[in-house]
Length: 264
Image 1 (tube, one colour):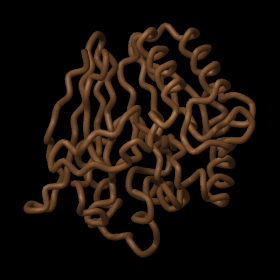
Image 2: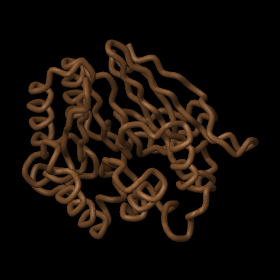
Image 3: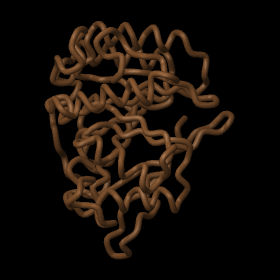
């Protein structure tokens, strides 16, 4: 939703409309935004205004935040003030922007793919050795039956499931194939439920060599007409999980379910 939650776009045609649709369909326990949330303070204000001041919001670092110092300073402060009292912090240098937490029978992992082992803005999108080791230790420490890993960049870019728009080809984790393959194998070994990402602004889902990759698309409303605005609702039962995709129907000016992904 980057650039479409600011003071110039406070009407339901943009990110506000996504939040209103989430409220209407049932806002769930919390929201995870998989990057491109620039400026994050505006996104946080909108979430608070529509979904309530105590509604939990978990941001993921995207490339646009990593390249904007004032965004990163705000997100580090948010992490210290709103997250670190109830999450497991990330590795040194990324404590506020990489973290994990449990919710009922699920384990949630949020990673900062721009962390290079020292700086939380030191790479252009990679799974550095330090980040890999932290994720490995974190996954080894959970016994939850459902595990969701959130990062900004996909393993590979896939076209939008509706109209085939294809963005960021080759500009993803596959920029660093060795690290990408190592990371994918780690997630497969721990039988994670899904890897959920952003970056392309398209909605897609595929099971790639046994690993679910789900691209959440964009939530900019009419701010991006190249693909339909989208939000996902994740449902976790005792022994099953499914994800509903809601996309903007321009003819009806509302968000409707277009896909139901049964996670096996």
